[in-house]
Each structure stands twice: as structure tokens, then as C-alpha cells.
View (cartoon, rainbow, N blue to C red):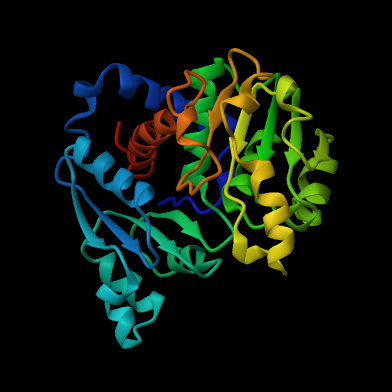
Length: 304
């Protein structure tokens, strides 16, 4: 029995296989409509989610399976003080596979030690979000036709963003990728990410503080939200916040085939005026999340 807690638990061959299956699902949905008939997915979401939870549920339904679970801790027995360990032992009696989101880093890993069925980490604190990373990789592969040989800019909160850290880890295993890290000094990529991933693997990267100075060289722009609560004082936030709002005007110097990604939810960091630009791929990204989760559920359930 295998679970998925960290994207690095998958080899690049396994990632490529999952992306191939996801692409085949897109092309041939009817072929997969009964692959998980009689199987049950439990979605255990101890913190709020829209896209991740609903895409897992949609994925299982489209595979012909069923779904049970809860969408907030208060609607489970954890509100009465039940431990994660006991919740997992209980739910794994009823379901064939579990997708779990938890505010505490490491909680899904602990769950794997108590579960009778595979666990998928659907996000744990600021730590890991492997299925978002698979979603991002599928979107890049579909837009660029490859997972190597491009320049990607990460913009916004690069210090606390688990999606950014996971995607940097995943992309570090592919060849000839340049990374541009765009953030205020207060929200730079943590030193451990630079030392353990970028420096150790010889990834070419640079850090800048404005989007305008690098826009023209990017093949992919990965936007994230600059969060007011991360700043020590409001003056710094007000000084910097507009620097990272993507508008049509800021795209004037961008490549015609730029792909704009965002893990969502957005607040105001991408103007709605950008939504109709053909380079905006963040809602395609949402849809890709369903297909890649379908492929992953099949893999962990060993469904062929």
C-alpha cells in the first residue's frame, strides 16, 4: 500500500506517467468512467478548501466511485477532542483511499502510520501540497509541451507559500530550468530552499524585487498572494503591495506565449482584466487539477 505525502516521493518517471494518464483522461474520458466503480474516497479537510476538496470529489465521481467525508474540523469528532490518529483509524474502516488536509505540518504523514488505506496529502500547513504541484506540472506540460528548458518566475509570497516550495522541488529535477524569484525582502524564498534545493542542484536563479524588470524574459509566471498579515508593519505592506498586482499594462513587455499560473484563491494580485488574456491559464490549471487527481487515485488504488 502506497501513499503520497511529498512530491519527491514520486520519481520523474512516475510523474511523467501520471501526466500521460491525465492527458489520456482528457482525451478519452469515457474510458475511465467506471475505473473506480465500488470504491470510496474519504475527504478529510480539517481546514477550509474549495478547489482541492471539490476537485478530489469530482475526480472520484468521474471515475465511477463514491465520496464521503467532512469539509471542516468542526463537523467531525475532532471538535470533541478526538485525535487525528483515531479519526484515521476509524475512517480507513469505511473508505478505500483518503485525501487529507490539515493545518499542522506532518499530520498526513502521521496518518499513514495509522491508516489501513492510502493517504493523499491535500496540504499540510506551510509544508507540502503535492497534488497542487502535479496540477502545476500538468498545466506547464500542456502549455509548453515539456518540463525542461524554460524560465519560470515565482512572484509574491515566496517565504510561506507551500505551493511555491513544492513546485521548486519538483522542477529542480528537470534540466535547463532557470528560476526568477520575485518578492519583497520580507517574503523571499527561505534559505533552506535555496541551500538544499537550488544551490545543491546547481539551478540557475536570481532574486529581484519588481516584476517589471524581468517580465520580458519569462516563459511562465507563477503568481501568489502577498499577504498583509505577513508584514511587521502596515507601511511596508502598503509600499509593496501594488508592485505585485498583475495588470494588462504590466503584460505589455511579456512574451506572446507566456503562461500565467496561480494556485488560487486570488485576492487582488491578478486584475480581473487579465482573465480574458489568452496567456491567463489559472482556470485551465483548476480543471487540470481534477484530471491529475483522477490519475493519482487510480495509481494509489492500483487500478489499471
